[in-house]
Length: 82
Image 1 (spheres, helix red, strand yellow):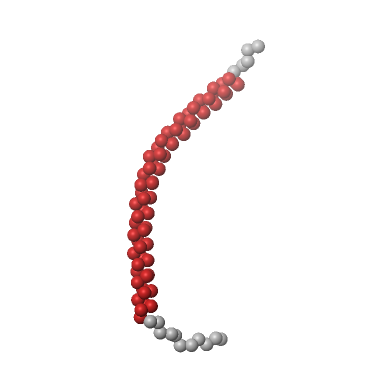
Image 2 (cartoon, rainbow, N blue to C red):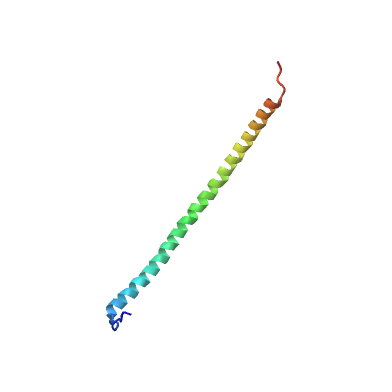
């Protein structure tokens, strides 16, 4: 087993610097998170508006494809006149 020596006393200036940087980092992180959250809310609103338009287009395309498929089936199932 390795025996460790006595702990070294850390300078109060270094302790103050460490705690200061920790506090500054936490405050900056909270500020940055708030800024990003606001931006994300705006992006989600735009995406919600675009989703309504996109869903309407998809519904129209599905409706058109279904009508075309029904017409093709009707043409194939109709007896041919020769």
